[in-house]
Picture 1: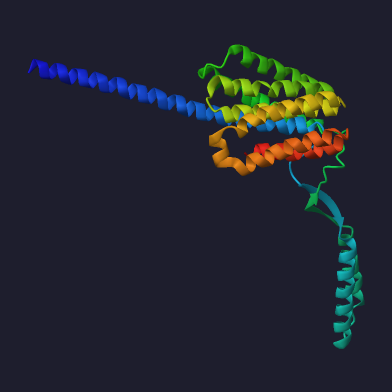
Picture 2 (picture 1 turned 90 degrees about the vertical axis):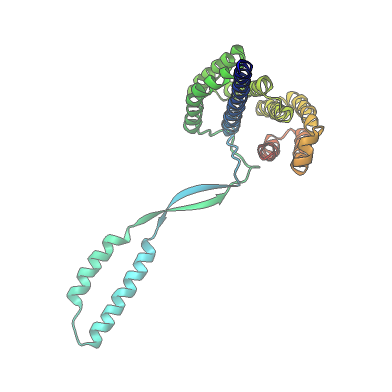
Length: 301
């Protein structure tokens, strides 16, 4: 009987340890999945902001609101209405002079009328205006990212991300907010590329997904090339695009990624080669067009 009790106790202890281990593993996996979503959010927002510094949008169309003067239409309708009423009055043998004058005054009040019309307008990339920057929109996006970062920090610490990397991100983000306040485009571009460079480090610290690591590394080098082109440093752009190709070649060697996303991966590789080809023309707008296409492909993988 005593032996049976000891056996039951040992069994319960073993079961408890096993369940605790499973629970801890599930908690870690859930946290990692959450951090993946948070890092993806940072990734997307940073690319949006740095692209906005050259007025590059990742949509072929933009919503435009404009005022439309409908006075002439109202005038035509008013004239038709008056003519119709006069005709009916004459047919009935009635006089409409008093009514016509009154209605005419009412119609004049409604003639000077404008309405807001919303429409989708095509926005070409090759003629992008890189000078008139919407700093208010950029500031708003950066502040939203900064507020979100305060929450994300807690999850990164739980996954044992180094405090040095986290502090570097915080410091760079503060510097970016100051540069935006001063509307210093050149400094913003440089700081934001450096900030994005911490994303591959975060991923390397907590994730075993090498494909995710090399994709973010590829983006980082393309962003560095983009910064180079923005300051017309074409040699830097060329070097960074070569590094982007090297980083992405590791994704192409990943059998799991190739088996699931071969078509998208091949399109991205072509996009990187197109960027390299465009670089030889030293034409910023051509490069920005190719940059937009390549980044869109990378975002969709």
